[in-house]
Image (tube, rainbow over all chains, first blue to last red; front, side, top):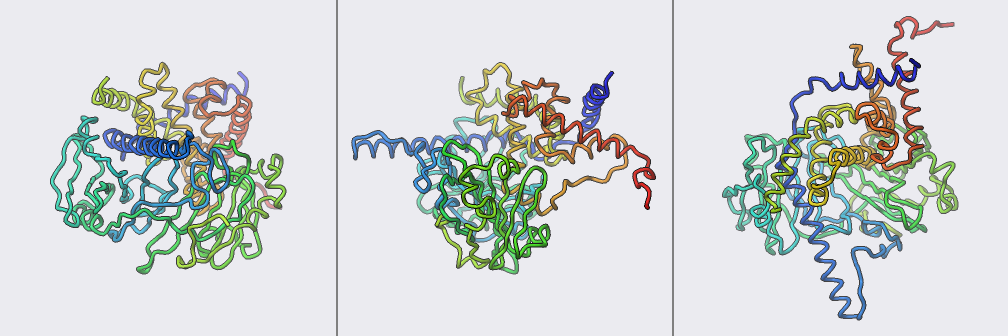
Length: 363
Length: 172
């Protein structure tokens, strides 16, 4: 038997041994998966219906058929970009109060083909996401959508509505599962304009769960708004944003930047996933530790990726891309602006003070 | 089929595959907590597509593909990248003395795509073509990722199994 074959046989048998005697699952809840999956479908259908209504209105107005959902990004002309590249992070609501133990709040980009967006408060950095981490997820249903009707019509798993005290004087209820393994608590209430709002909690202290959720709900503000970012980036040919997020963390009674990220492409209009990630974080953060040379400009290759970082106005900015994209297969528009360093030089950092941030990322 | 029936059917499918999905998720992520998160995310995605895929012949293959691509996407997300950065640039290797855990250590040092290739080829017993299909890449890419992964594992397992004295070498 060849050494290769021997190693492959060893791998096949030992991988099986590795997964013997697994611990009991934590955080796997099929009923919850069905509920969340259904909500996502509501978002997509709501957006499709909204898109159709807009298309009909536009067609009547100009005598032409348009398809807003599949149109190019007005900021960049990109066909397949799913996020508004000019103003990539938006939210339908915000937390006004959070219990101790969930200091991180993350806002994310909203894909154009969907409606609504989750705002997530967590007990640790969201990327860490250990099972059982305290998490509060806030979601505003599109106007005209009553989630209770969908629950009753669809699922045998979620059938119980339990009375809850009114939230700011308006109807509220707890959503209960027939599944004895229910791992999350869900509170729904109606906002002032009639939209349904949902707060889901997992991994929270059970003794204060009810009061914490009610207090959190009462302090939620429902208002669609753009989330300011701590940087701008120059318009570049082919630049299109696929994902974006901003995470804030509560420190000394103030919300300060944890990080802000965008995943984007410079390739061409047919790209369907990001090739580059730009991450901006406070200069005292982990990037500074990884890059002691920050202050001049640092570049590093690791794990098949090339990363270039810089710092200004108390913030670090790093752009990362697959190494082969930066060297051998560099797209012409990246080469034309001086590679990753040239790309990074087109990023302007606005400092840590949110008053200086902007909702117009492309300049 | 009514939606209640469809949900019940999905619940039955997800329950019956949960243990297997967790196992694959663990081999991909190297951590049972992350495996549970990955499994839950995969089940949510499968539910979202259930109306399209319920009658599919190879449902397990579809589920596996969803999981692998979710795993790879997470490893490329801004949140994950920030996490990786804050954890240091090098892969985190758990200190373990037990011999069987050598393999876990060696696996944990592999980049995500190589790790996925190893799991699909040698645990799920997929062919090169099936692996390429699941990872949405070329067969050539699967072959090169596999070769690199095997090289890395071979090197890692050998160095783990060397007596401590010979690993330390000789000072000159």
